[in-house]
Length: 140
Image (cartoon, rainbow, N blue to C red; front, side, top):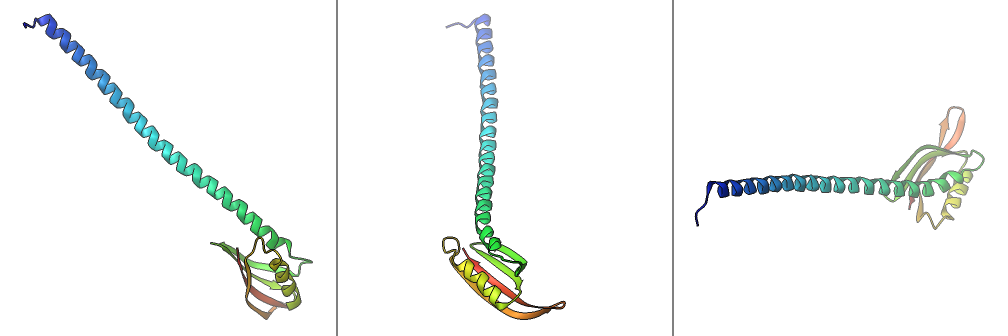
């Protein structure tokens, strides 16, 4: 078979056309891959936000009873920390009886708190007042 110059030009043109299309498809494939990676990153961010929202909701569910059981301004918090599965409370009570009543009310909330552990309680002079300084660990 004899190739004429015209036939060779035609094949070269088709080859160039196909090469251009192939390069174009490669560019599109790279864009698609980049978009898939961005999609994975966005999914991770959304998942993190959802988990954070769930944790915030859980913390509110836990903190509300801790604060709501404070009656007549007889318990004062100095520090409150929420860690993995527990809440640590440092504070002051007007009397041992007030502290005992507060802890008793928290213990009644078995659906929220697994254990209420009084780590320490002792008298302390705070300005002109005698108060009870306490540390409590609440297990969720």
